[in-house]
Amino acid sequence: MRVRAVAISLWSHPQGRFGVVVIALWIVVALTSCVWTPVPLTQANGYDAWQGPSLGHPLGTDGTGADVLSWLMAGSRIDLLIVLLTTALAAIEGLLLLGFMAAAGPAASAAMAVMTDALISIPTVLVALILAVPLGAGVAVVVLACGLGYGLNLARVARPRVLLASRSGYVEAARASGGSWARVVLGHVIPNAVPVLAVQLSLSAATAVLAESGLTYLGIGVPTGTPSWGSSLAASVGLVSVHPLTVVWPGLVVTVVVAALNLFGDALGEAVDPVANPLLRRASSSSASRHRARASHDVATKRGEEP
Image (cartoon, rainbow, N blue to C red; front, side):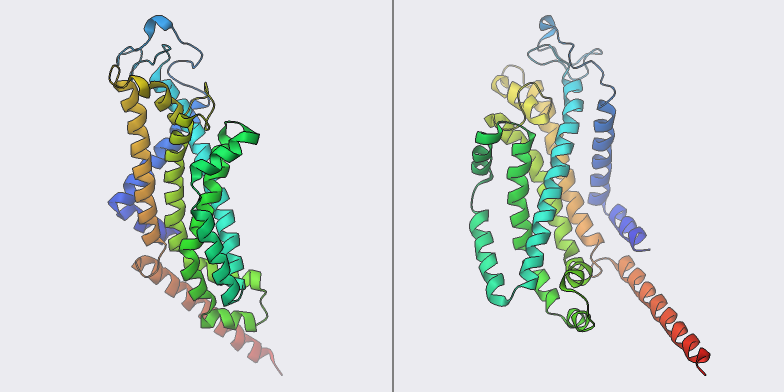
């Protein structure tokens, strides 16, 4: 019931619908590119360099004569992998920090917040440059630099909501009933921060797409020769005044995907918030009523079996 309520609310928002469609199309294209592209990536003819859109090359060709559409399709799976890994790393780091902040006392929690603010001030580009020294340019540099930074930001933004939930009456009751702190945090504290976490993780995913393009342009992101949206931009941005279409297509793809991720996050934040989603509120109320009715029935049955 709750999943259905979230899905209905998400699809009812125009921005949520737009985000779902774009993200679903992105996943389909990424999976399709694993087995098929309009033109094989290894097929490049220097005589076909900088061609405009045609039947053979719907989006034209780049400076090596490679098909732009095929490279964008292949690049979609690299960017999707970066987004998934970055978001997963940010979520793990952010949730661990939030759990420690909720479990620690007020003084320790405030000290952790100050340390988090200090670490957030370090630019992602600087972290990527430091990581590129031992690791070299690659996907790992983008994922680690972005994931670590976004995880800190996630913890800092969600901290007030988590601390408020950790000091509520039902959390104290759960602790008094014998529940471990880890179980209480995962079962009662973190779920109250889901709307904030959903928005922040979607922002992290959108920023990861932009970071991949920027870091690849600087030479510390995806290696040269590996298809990605950032590499397509980096390879053609120097000739934007001569062959603008080769920059327009990857730039348009990045813009649409980033906008879709941001809009999807806003709609998802409202869809998973019982205050903003009446369908979810009704589903939660009916579920609580069923649990109470079941508990009453069990108690009555148990009393009837007593001598």
